[in-house]
Image (cartoon, rainbow, N blue to C red; front, top):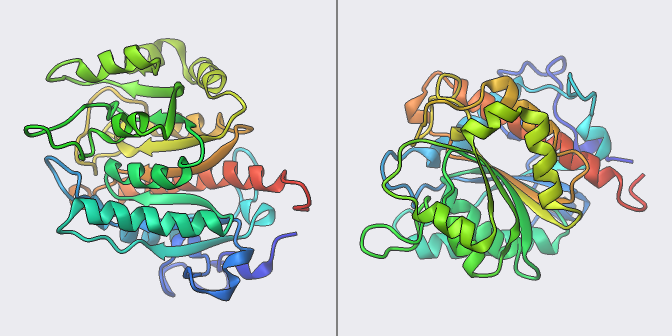
Length: 325
């Protein structure tokens, strides 16, 4: 059974506009807290956008996502999953990045996730730009390459930017494949679209066996059919889920650095996560929410709602572990 200490504060006990903002109004459990060993799923902020090449701002996302998460309640209205009945969840705080040094920030992120992994906690991350995923994968994928389902309008498979610089938010999964953190034949990228400088990224995907599903195919086939294929590609092995908010059409999620027209609507954005149920997920992230480009908070509200959907899927996995209940 789950511990009542790891449940959100109810809006009928304390108004949702009151109190210290944490993810989903959960308790804040730092990594040196004695209760860390009881946590099943840790929500983590990575307030860093050192890989951004054009419009910065995702460093501010974890704070806004925490604020908007007070709107999220306890039960999924569609799937009826009550994640806090299934797993002990907590806000583990933020990784402290070095805004002046990309390499040092990545080392700090990896070190943080090493401690989370050692504690046996499944991480759900609020980024940060998409380069944040690479140092997380350096921890979670160190022992064996993971599969991945990736929702995005960009592949993030480019080799380098600006004369050979290899670490930007357009390169994390190229590095992850090269470093053996991802098994490319178990990677599916969904929603890819928009004008391009060239097709170097797509050529790389074809060469190593990554399945790229462009947005035209997504719309033609529909959510259920596409996600059936994605699940088959992922297989029964361990996978990571990476969700870039720019997967969604900017009519619904304008607060991001690199928006692309023609994406799914907000309902389809929820549907794809619900179709992840039953997969062997070991971690997930929501990245590229950029508050400066949507001060209303609407994009962050969509982002945190998607994190709740991910949390529901992850909590269901936890509940099926031997001896959990």
